Length: 248
Ligand SMILES: *C/C=C(C)/C=C/C=C(C)/C=C/C1=C(C)CCCC1(C)C
Image (cartoon, rainbow, N blue to C red):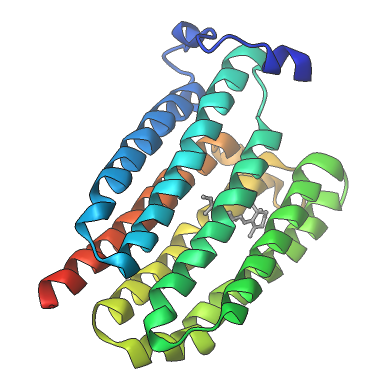
C-alpha cells in the first residue's frame, strides 16, 4: 500500500466521488479551503510589521501543511477507501505544535518565555501520540478508551494553561488586541478542539459506542474540525494584526 501511494498519480480517481460520499466531499473542499487560506495568509503577511508578520506566516504554514496532507488524504480515500489515519496524524503532529507556537508569538510582547511554548508543544505531542495509539495501534477492547483518556488529559492541560495558567496572565498584561485575540484563541481550543474527541469516539470502539450510531463519521468530523480550527485560528491572528496596526 505504501508503494502504491508514493507512485500514485496526482490525478487519482477524484472524479469518482459519489454524491453521498461526505468523506470524499469534505476532503476535497477541505483541501481547496486550506489552499485558499494559505494563499491569503502568505500574500497578506507583508502588509504588517515584523512581529505580526511572523504570526501570519505561521498561520499560512499551518494551512499550507494541512493543504498538502489533505491532497494526499483525498487521494488515499478515493483510491483505498479507508480512513487515512497515518497522514491525518502526521498533519496534526506538525500543525498543532505550530498552533502552540502561535500562542507564544502573540504573547511575546508581554514577555512570554520559550518555556511556555515548549510546555504547550510537549503537551500537544503527548495528546496526539496517545490519540494515534488509540486509533491505529491498540484498536480493540479498552485500548481506544484508555489512550483517548490519556490524550484527553493532555488536552485539558493545554486548555488549563492557556485559560487559567501563566499564558492568561501574560495576555492580561499585554491587553488590547493581544488580549482579545488570546481570548478568542482560547475559545477555539476549548470548543473547536472538542470536536476531535467526538470524532474519535465515533470512529473507535469503546464504552462510547453509542456515538458511532448517531450517524456521525469520524473523518467528516475531523475535516470540519480542521477547517474551523486551522483557518479560523489563522483569521483571528490576522484580525489581531489588523487591529494592532490600526491603533498605531
Ligand atoms: C489542525 C488540527 C488540530 C487543531 C487538531 C487537534 C486535535 C485534537 C485536539 C485531538 C484530540 C484528541 C483527544 C482530546 C482525545 C481523543 C484523541 C484525539 C487525538 C482525537
